Image 1 (cartoon, one colour):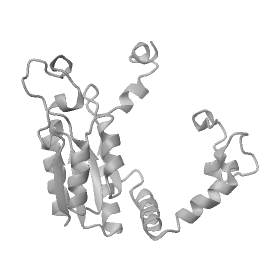
Image 2 (cartoon, helix red, strand yellow; image 1 turned 90 degrees about the vertical axis):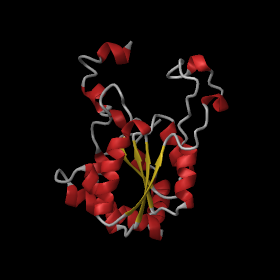
Image 3 (cartoon, rainbow, N blue to C red; image 1 turned 180 degrees about the vertical axis):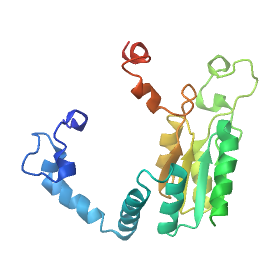
Length: 208
């Protein structure tokens, strides 16, 4: 069992291979050699190399928006796919405008594309977010991914997709995927706030 979350040595970060915990993944030497070979594949090498450069150049200096732009430019990506939530339409427009300002071609697909009723996935009217509505459409991340695949995007960016919908989008996207922001309606799309307050305000909510 891997329990890196409980590690106190962090030997991997220090390169201290002489004092590894008993269940440290660094002991998986055969697998590590396989991983190293995968990083030599051209596309993987390009992404790993450029993401390391962005990490160093942007460290505590650049916002997530700026880092996405820098990464895409270093990788020479030209066409960016934006898969976004209808609830973040305003934010998606601003983000897409910024990307276009920096010379990218942007293909944006909203989550409600296709106008597919929730009855198609076995959701009754009583189970809808708004039971009083005659029509409530599903979020369609499979459609978002396929439509962006058809447009041959170089990099896809997720903005505010719901839990599970993001998983399906990643599953079906042919282009590499990065995340701009995730959905958390309660915490203003800042899910780590629950972690930061897990020993105070959110303690009972999270550990009940």
